[in-house]
Each structure stands twice: as structure tokens, then as C-alpha cells.
Length: 153
Image (cartoon, rainbow, N blue to C red):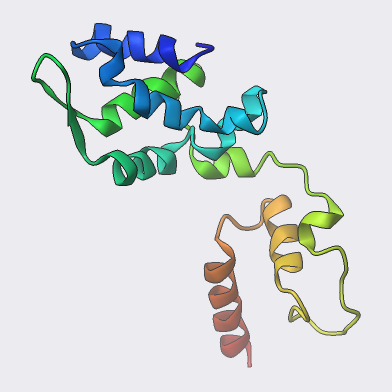
């Protein structure tokens, strides 16, 4: 699939109604093309968390022009599967593949000794994510680290 209209036409064939019933949902999934017209734009919304975000934006269901109530998640799942070779990746599937660059981690590391992060903890967290040692978000990673430090003392 290359264009949200094609996804909307596919939705109309699958769920009934007309493509315009579904256009807004498919436009939302592909809105990141405005910033980067490469397939990597999909990292923003083409994953499981994106499906739930679509529900928050559009509601749990929409009623198509045939009068049928369709779960927004079904529409999103159809879109993501059509673009991702039949699968629904997790957000982590996309984020793990980002190649870290120095500017992404605030561009400097404070000089210090010891195991605990000093200065911006995102530097140590980003390193652990890039190395595949954690899939936790920054807040959860920091909490887990605090627990480890407390238990180790």
C-alpha cells in the first residue's frame, strides 16, 4: 500500500460502506509522511501502541455509511498489516532499530566514578536500550535501577 486512499478502499471492501468512511483513520496513520516520505515514517504509529492511540483519537468504533459499527482498532490493524507484511510490530520493534547518535543522548557525558548515572540519566538508559539490555522506558528503568541500588546496599 502506498497511499491512505488505497487503505480506505481496502477497508470499504472488508467492512462495507465507502472509502470516505475510513479515510480519516488511514490519513492519521500516514500523517508522519509529511515529515519523512520514506517507509521509516511508520515507526511513529504503525505498531500496537499506535492502534490504541488511534482509539483515543477516533473513539472505540465508527459507524460506516452502511450503518455498521466498526472497531477503530480493526481498521488500524488492517492498515498496519497491509504496510508491515502481515504483522503488527510493537513500538519496541521499531525503536530497537534506531541507530543511536551522540546528539540523541544530549551530546555529552559528565565525568564521574561509580555505577550510578550522573547528570542526564538518559545517556546510560539509551546505551542499555541500544545494547538490548533493557526494553524499559526511562522512568521504569530509573525505578528499577533505584531498586537495584537499594537492594545492593
